[in-house]
Image 1: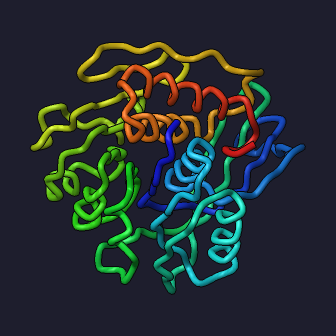
Image 2: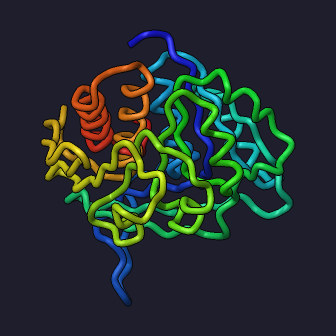
Length: 269
């Protein structure tokens, strides 16, 4: 992969990952035999994966609460090769709990409101002009337009249809889950339409529009859990397109990133 300047505009949660003997059931006590705490959520996971792929610091425009979780998130992201560009809020940093059982099945609970970087935040938005690729997981319509300064722009449908319609920017790829109703947007709903729309289906691969179905990549080890797999896939797509690769090659890279994530506990290993 050539030298790339990459960035993410989005959100994070401080997540407590727990490996349990069984997922919660009413009236039943489950026990955790493994735990881990990390800054996670779509924005953080994509940023860390991009840093690993490019082997260069990745800009992460985000919003954090002025609290211990926000400070820990900023410090940990720097350890992981990410350069946080933070809009500090008085609200608490969002937190989450992710539980996974021995089969790899999981359950996630988030705590608090999602903090979103906005175009009106006094951040160094002009730095996006020099980026080869940017992924957006959370912002406002004006923030998405600022991200369009990059040569390649990808995003998640979780930005929501009204925001995407209001921004009216050409996405190089819209990447979401084909199994999650909250991430499905009608193909004719956006003007201009994305150059590429990807609907993932986990271990079954997914669908490219245009392009048809694509196949998954084999796991490099036993399945551990699926947290962060879709976000790692989106990072691989973003990096591949930013590098000028073909769509097929970028999808293969994304699928490999997702498969690697599925074989580790937590999104970073």
